[in-house]
Image 1: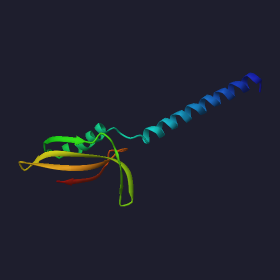
Image 2: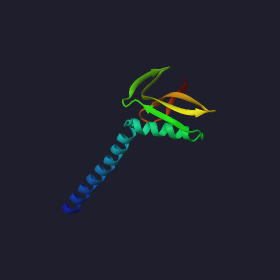
Image 3: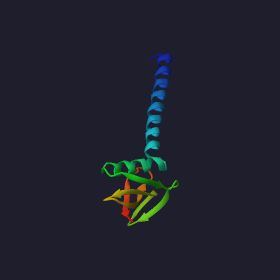
Image 4: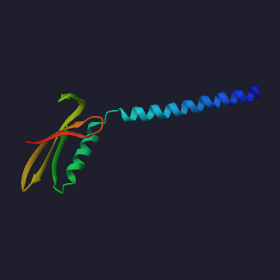
Length: 109
């Protein structure tokens, strides 16, 4: 194998390795990044909207907080939803995971 081919092979291998590592790192960082509070609220609101009852109002805290409950350790957002049920305004508060937007707890006030 000539020196030019060897250099080309080494450089090509280094570029391909760097590309694969960059894609992997990018995917890892995307999966381990907190969602912003507006995105989490949109996910929760969409879940409530599927029940065909009009939503009157929503709110969410802009900053996530640490939650330790029953062995669960997570960063969460606290928020609430108001909607009409049987002609009465009913309020709910929820706790949602800051990384996935998944509801951890929801309760009627």
